[in-house]
Amino acid sequence: MISPARLPARRIAALLTGAITLVVAATGCGGGTGAGSATGKVTSITALDYYTDEPEHTQWGEMLTACGRTAGVKVEQTSVPPASLVPKVLRQASSRTLPDLLMLDNPDLQQIAQTGALTPLDRFGIDSRGIAKGILSAGTHEGKVYGLAPYVSTVALFYNKDMLAKAGVAVPRTWGELKTAAAELTRPGRYGMAVDANATFEGTWQFLPFLWSNGGDERRLDTPQAAQALQLWVDLVKSGSMSKSVLNWTQADVHDQFAAGRTAMMVNGPWRIPALNKDKNLRWGVAPIPVPRTGQTPVTPLGGEVWTIPRSPSKARQEKAAKVLACLNNSSNMLTLAEQHFTVPSRTAVAARHAEQVPSMAAFVTSLEAARARTSELGVRWPKAATGIYTAIQSALTGEQTPEEALRHAQRFATGD
Image 1 (cartoon, helix red, strand yellow):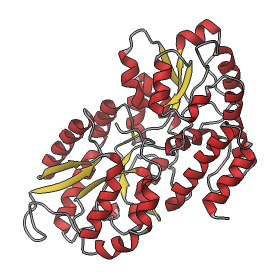
Image 2 (cartoon, helix red, strand yellow; image 1 turned 90 degrees about the vertical axis):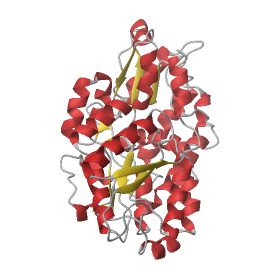
Image 3 (cartoon, helix red, strand yellow; image 1 turned 180 degrees about the vertical axis):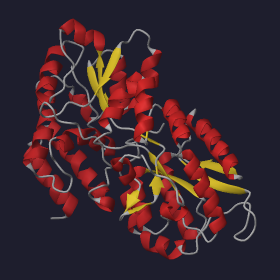
Image 4 (tube, helix red, strand yellow; image 1 turned 60 degrees about the vertical axis):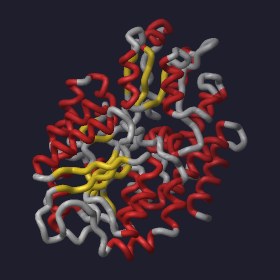
């Protein structure tokens, strides 16, 4: 699975500035290519995604083939590297060669839907019942659902069971407990806690649970609630409980530190579980991200991809694509995909069943109860706010600015004030 925060931070804003007008003009006549004309029988449709890695590419290819069979078509899958997907979509929209079925990282949906390149799914009667409200919002633009996610993911707190037991430390549930536990678990050659605080959207993604759970909001970054969340990270670094190297670590680096025993706890996603499972000597557990105060529910960001139907002059092709999309999102296939990719099915009842079958996923299922899409508040303005957030994190953790100063700067950057 592609990490939902691993995509380059700069790729969208620069691309869309000059492309939206062109795309809007072009998509009115756009449509996918392939077997079957606008009036003839449709025997195949095209699908575009960014699952270039194995085994994901093959797994998705098999699922698309199976769902194509139920719809009576062959699905021709094309996969491009993650950073290339949106540029390719914009080029295809302008040249009227969009695929029949398009996968998008969920934060990108708002920006692509705004161009007019996508078709609302309510036209096809696709069943979205049972999908959590927050998850459904990830595929929604201006009140209309344009994309559905078969599964989603978020982040949680991984911890080394042996290290916590030896130190007599309980799994932290609150910020205060987290600071205490991280300090007690820190010793020469090992830090108590690790996060990804690098200067990309990945760093922002990891900070959001702390910002949102404390009542902070990307609509207004220069608030006491936001500063308190950033101060927590600053305190962990200043106390020596967290390495200053988190400023440069990716989520993969954080995982490597944890697997090597150089940190006792980390924030990461369920896509790390397969690698952790391979080390039979590593005893680990997962818990929800600690919250500011006892009794609160963590608010975490939604990761994952949504499947969409681009605009097309061929209603027949769209109807076939809709059948495939519905198949990808039925309860049975959601469960299969979640088991393959260590993710959470988007339908609440299926997610609960998955948590029972795979206990290591339980914390992620719980965390998704209050999770929300990163674009839910700002829509197409999200990338600018995200850039302001990770810039503020860098400034505060290096000591260049206080959290308050760094977030005031982030607010000015995000709004142009």
